[in-house]
Length: 543
View 1 (cartoon, rainbow, N blue to C red):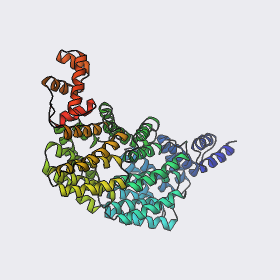
View 2: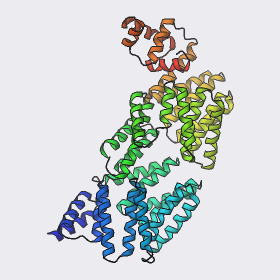
View 3: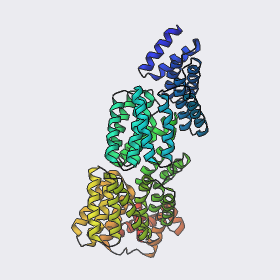
View 4: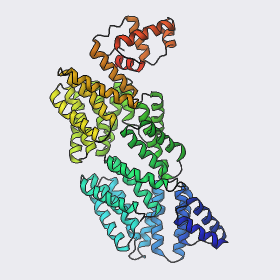
């Protein structure tokens, strides 16, 4: 019976039936001593089910079983996987210990594929120092070892590391060709389950970080299909959902993006990769709440992101700007930039700095940020960075009063965002275009751009942006606000988030009177919501 269960467990493992494989192999382990290969299979089944501690336990047993059988090379290979698991769980000392143990074994293992796996640890060190030239050279050597031994897992991981290094070095075409080649190996089912998941997640992560969003989206779609074929798997499901949430946000599918981020946090907290993604999931939730004007929910999500180790910038700084807390916003984004020494991280912060510095009157700082973003886009050319840089340059030129230069940059940005199918970014660009056209006296085009922006923001349900557009439209068509002293007092309390009842208590008037004042304020400012009135008050310095 034990032999039968073991045989069925091996078959279930081969079919990616993780729960059944785990259960049957566990039963086999209770009845007889498993071979080292079966222990590795049991460990990997545990990993796919998010059972990290058991994954480590059975891998260590496999290591000892290989040593007992005299297979030093296989034991050395196990040390890499054990160390890799400790590294991902935030246990670097244990990881280094296992890697050192593996290198010691290599001294008597002869020429074997384990040398390639343990050499990956050097790539981690090169990348952590920002030495991507050395990382690329090391990955090439590892690929040669993998090809010599016919190990597709190692070869694909080496190609992934080569692609990452090339993209970070600005060698975009070479890097993307390797990314495409890696996709062939993964989609063809040539890799072991764990390596397939690692390659999917790592490739999407570095493509996203380097703003290769079309490639990231293609890989995320493939990862989604891969996960769907393994409904029992937990190990990579949360990571997949977070990637989808981020890309859906850019595409304007905000309700679906919020659902994906919430599912990642609520249902897939098992497994080291999923837990590492929880901070990003919380940040994605915060961004979506901020864009929709849900301030309290955004605050809560940003706090959770920080607790999970994901700094909530630039989202939190932009939230503060929307609340009229300009000094706090500027201080936050400047501090975050002072700690960012990687060009990709700086590129994620610089557009927010441009927007915030222009709001606080920091023209020189905004100009410097836009210039740096343009330099990054030129050194690491892709359509997303070009769109970001053009939008920032246009905003600065518009603030400087150089309408012609602003229009040229903003038109380039708008075209790029439309090509990328990024409706929110396109609508934001249209708002600046509208203001710039109005400064040139082209009122018709200004109104058309503003109407297009309003339509997009309404479809997205981007509350704060709808309010800004309404406030801008009210100003262009109305002139002076014309509010009475009492209406100004009501507006100040309204902008502070007070309810009609709270305003009535503060001013010692009836709620009905407050309601009448609020309606008069809306009419005079040309707005239709409390949020729009609050934005008008902040931007026109009525508070």
